[in-house]
Image (cartoon, rainbow, N blue to C red):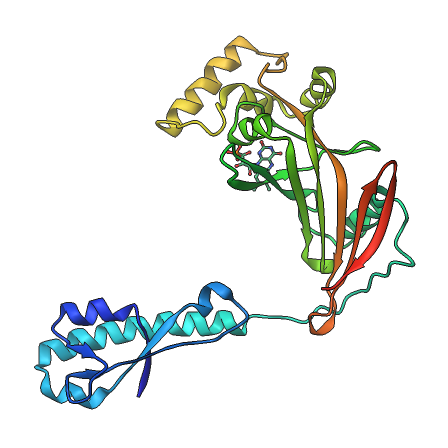
Length: 290
Ligand SMILES: Cc1cc2nc3c(=O)[nH]c(=O)nc-3n(C[C@H](O)[C@H](O)[C@H](O)COP(=O)(O)O)c2cc1C
């Protein structure tokens, strides 16, 4: 008996196999669910059992075609099996509601410093999620550029996909994942624009080419070729040889949080999760099941 994914079925049928649950035909197929609970998506995979002795009835061409499918499917199965095995235990730290800072901003700064000290390449990279007007979420990586007492500031194009989504709904979420310290921080709240002065203050610290890039990029719109973009940058170089002003459609957003979650990976998946919820003007802290 061989274990094969059910996806092979149309391929086998196309080369003349008769696949049926009945005995006495070319193949006997028994369909069952494989319950690998570690991955819901992969768990849906349905496998088929195919009796090889049935191949006796087939001519050599069909056997060769079958074997090439078999080889391909076995390769796919071994990749999937190795994903099932890909796991590690988290043992680098612990996090307790009694020692967690009462102010989540202060707690964030402590963990951010740890992430910097751990030598992560981009500890300031975060995933920012927004929602479309038909309630579809989307996310992308952005760089955090400022954390102050009001919130978390990032810079982008106001007319991009995310810009349009924020204009439609201010609800947003940001997520930091720092693998070397086995931590993630999830922050939720409302996203608002920073002032043009605050945007310009940051914009002028960007390298010259990046400032021109902000002018040249109609972020998230279709671009016919890379050459077109480079040509636009070249034209902008002659227009702004020294000072590059702030584009009117570019600037900062601040996510003003009402929820923080600090996650510390622990052994045997018994992780520590401490959340802070804003209640009036103070933060209520509690632990969640992992
Ligand atoms: C490490 C990294 C950092 C990024 N930083 C920014 C950023 O600070 N601002 C930005 O607009 N896009 C940044 N991007 C690109 C975004 O992920 C995204 O492609 C772009 O903003 C367009 O997103 P949208 O179409 O959802 O609006 C970054 C991408 C990566 C991988």
